[in-house]
Image (cartoon, rainbow, N blue to C red):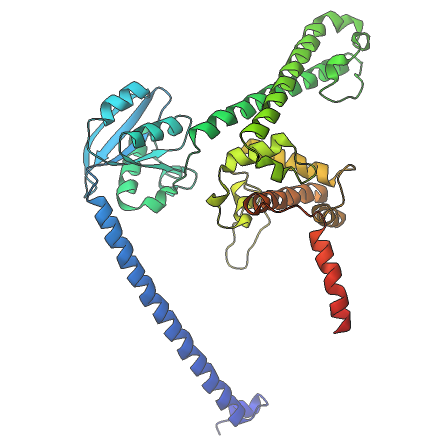
Length: 412
């Protein structure tokens, strides 16, 4: 005898039939929505193809350039993707101008690198359509087992012809922003050199049984020479003098950074409303992002600065990984320094500080470090929001909103 499945499940047949009808109706609605979206996507794709085809008619050649420090490899392909000519040229402005000023408007792809800013600007000046590829995201180049300059140029040429999205193109900063960033990077290099010399001196003194007093890097050169053991005092005195000279250079750089921020980038004052963000961090932030309009959402700045965890999810597996560390290394380091100040003993009471302390209080391995990174990421998002909106910073805005909502919840 055939059993009634619905009865075995403890449900009435009528109830099961109603649920089945509702499920079928919902499925039909989902299918109609899916087909409608598919048709709309197909129409949009046709329009995009028409626009690309119209734009490609004005392109004479598709060119890939693998930039080298001394010489660069180039590859020209036609509309069908066949190689027309290959070769190399010196990585100089004179030779690039001589080669590319005499050919018709072309679409050119090149890898990001030391020379890509001035090369892309020069080629665009000559009337070419230039795309700067991000090799970290280009699987065809990064995972190619037969990788050399010639093959890379071929791949860039074919990608710029058939699939621009595969290049993951980036946009270089303007000339003025690049020049001003050199000031910050020069200061960063001097600070790094001074830190290495200070650590070297401390290690050498410890190696003979001594120990130098604890002090800040800015005042290290004031260390009493008598504190250095006599047998190595004469040897280390030139290092102490060099550290003093570097400190003077850094002080001079700091004055130039403050003057530059006030005169040319007044928007840095909006960012300095957050206690813990100085003119150096604010200026580095503005110069690195260049324009707040580059990001549609402030939340996108976190991944741009490399302060979000990597992802390698597959099925039910979702391992916890380290942060990506992509983007500008100097800016990321400055944001982390500001986050450490916010969570430190001198940080003012704010939403950021409260959130960070809550994360650090959870305990566990590296809880404080994770809290610092999380606050650095939130700080990057907050600074972009302040820059774009021009609002006055309220340190305890979220806390005030929660306090206002509490009586309403109690009354309900």
